[in-house]
Length: 403
Image 1 (spheres, rainbow, N blue to C red):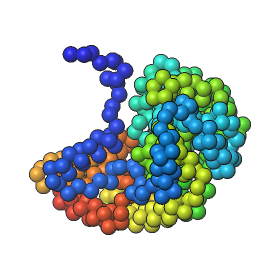
Image 2 (cartoon, one colour):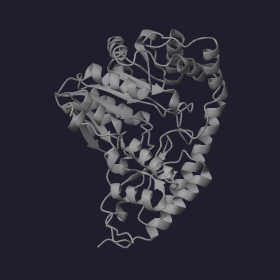
Image 3 (cartoon, rainbow, N blue to C red):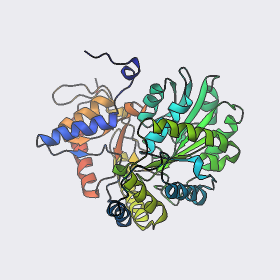
Image 4 (cartoon, rainbow, N blue to C red):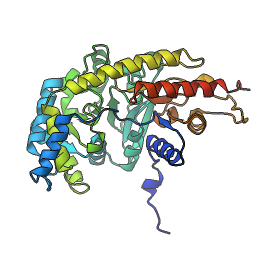
């Protein structure tokens, strides 16, 4: 048998993808499964974006491009950062990658040595810790509290920093909680980081465009411009423009780091898909009518879902400020027994039971570093969402109290 590296043995598969795969297996057997586990919009890619891709194919734009991305797309990204975030970058400080995930992976490979520490507030996106481990680093998980909106506080950040700390990863709006860092939150974190010049910041802004209640999005370097040279800002077209399968992300940061990240990309995937780059350019430079309509729909679904969940016994759910997830606490469900006598000891067991029994796929909070919670994605049609919640209500009502 071929021996596997120690590196890969320390890495866990994505819990989100694992749940999605199990749901697909059950569907293949004829089961009626509703998936609330997938983190992608349920709207189509805007027509003008799709047409740009078709034009690229028809005009033969199907060959290799520059590793860091085509010049016009990097310029469009630079314009986006100036327009939306008050951040000024040259095109050689911008990297286009195969999704935001590759931006983060490239960054960690370029920055982290064995033993270096990366601070990750929990709940976190499932891939952060394992990508840190793949770079040889040590994820330092800092729990956050619902009463603080699941946001990292300045005090908790100060306690987590050591001489080995190289990086802090922030995600706003958050996957999985949907909560945002406002200017005052980012300013407080900036005050801490000014005292620790050896710590950089990665700001994962992938859900930037999906914010609610008239909220103004801000990013870390925008609030702390004097720390821009220590900040990598990561974004993409996947969520805002319904382009998850197109696989285009982008990031901006210090020139020497971006060059190092491009070097890694050049030895792994090389350039991002040429056709998708043309489509991404159209997304960033074209109209955003479809985006505004989508956000309005998500805002309505969010409010219905949170109100409905909070009306259920044993559930507490914050009202998300962005993205398309809710992250309720289900601690009161833990330890309850199924009609077959199975004790649902934790959120993983509850999600597995709901999938097998009720035909609803959720992601357990344990995967995000927050046991006792589950993540719902409301990127599904309203009737489907209502049917899924009804199934969950029926299933939970069948449980016996904990011993």
